[in-house]
Image (cartoon, rainbow, N blue to C red):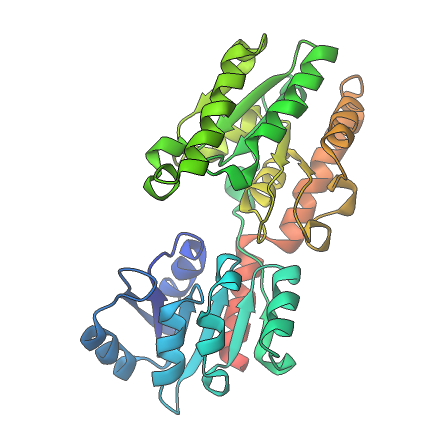
Length: 329
């Protein structure tokens, strides 16, 4: 039996992979829970280090640096990197020779890091985040094509103002459109709300919504685990961020049959079908309007995006890629 250790402060994107290995009788799984980017119980970490055969460090932060400098010769070490780590110095502190693979969740992030730290090709690999297509692929409600959604809007980097702009232009043309936001309110996210620039941005955003003649067609749904049910109403999932890694909301929306509309951030055409990556918000408006009188075309595209997710992001496929990685590296 292989002893597999997960080390990090946040495993929210690793849940499916953890469940996969915990259900495999060939693995025994333990966790080194870090309290922050650098804070941990070093005695506990050293005890777990002595126990483990394989280590997966989730997020390339202080946890990744510590394990790269302390791993034992017989052990395998894999570090998964998202996006936020690019602007931090942890990358430069890694002991690369002790790492089996840096695992990236998006091609553009992979290439940027490879160039930034001159990462050897044999130390780098791409495995996407998991998406539970079976859970998300549920029957849509009637007229879902007139419901556009944004999942996660709590920081100005997500650019919900662009989504408002898209919605208002659609509403001016066809009154059937409704906009749905789902996620934590920015005032409920302490690291966001303590920043004056964030507070000012959202103050103006909510004032704009309140003044809009279409405010009654803008719906805010609470953060929760009912994303699969929420997506039943959503015909189009919007991604308008300034920066993203893979933007998990896009793949989750596609898995549900929501057609993605993406603009503003670098690299989505490397992960998602390029036809859904648009130059501007006006291009998104035009693309959405194409479907309003063509339900047959809308239905066909829904099936296409679901099938794309099955092929590229489905939980079973991604977990087996991880199994192959840690077995053969």
